[in-house]
Image 1 (spheres, rainbow, N blue to C red):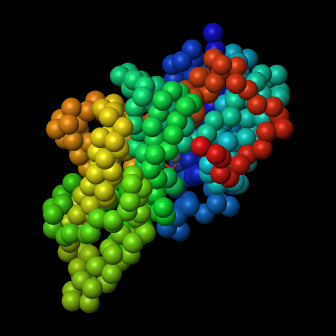
Image 2: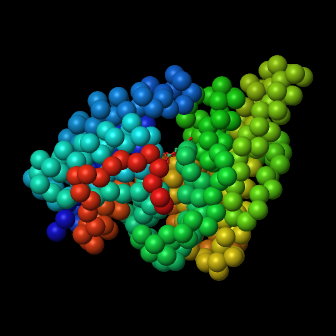
Image 3: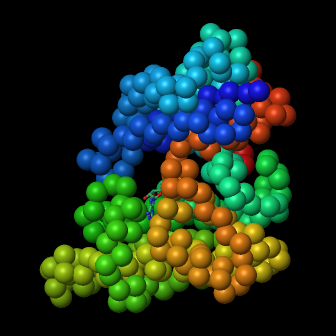
Length: 333
Ligand code: KG4
Ligand code: ZN
């Protein structure tokens, strides 16, 4: 029997989940809207809002899961990577909670957890599988051999795919985080209206920095000829940018699958909520005979459900950390 309380506070969402014998019975996510005014996450504001959100989120999670504090057997928390001030709130809360109840602490790597989100619901992928993890901070292709035996076989050399979405949205004067808004506008636009060159990057790696600059120059050039270019073409710009990003991601994923001879393919991280990526992945799967795995929406973006399921796997191995554990801005994968 195990009831695990999990805390995720690596960026701008405060999330608390409960895992009861391997089943997620609560996944509370308190979003921080304050960053919308600034076009990106302000770390100092994020940690302050985490402090306000964390206790109510824990209380709500206990209510949703129909358990009390005394039922909890271990506390799992995100130890990194993430914003140091944000992580500190989660780790400090987790340590105090564990100390007060005299229960073990479990540290979880945020990127592992995004991948292990596939083990929350059915169908679950079979090992080994390849996972494309695409978020606001990371873009990685990971060979997943077991729950905690993972190898990064490709990653971005600069910006993450989520940043390419968010920074394009900023150029288009859409509020932060712009990824979901680009997705929304893209559904009404023509993906082939404008063409953006695919970066030529060796192996299974990515680069989105030059791609983002090419969009900036393209928009500037068009606006010289027509100052209303963005307003008049918003849907087509969004559809074309989204189509290009999705093609970049899928082409590398195809290369990885072929190189490793694997047909079990998963996607994880906030960008896996993107409808263009989901559709493109399904289409590629039909063509190449892949079996694809996409977590439910609430487990794609940052959430404590994924920390809880990773924590559960560590609990089964009695893999605990002491009260002297440090929160780290960047953890080894
Ligand atoms: O995994 P996540 O919640 O946080 C990080 O660990 O970064 O990912 C957030 C990222 C943001 O860049 C956001 O714009 C992007 O995921 N995102 C999307 C969509 N939903 C979230 N990007 C494109 N289309 C979406 N539907
Ligand atoms: Zn994340």
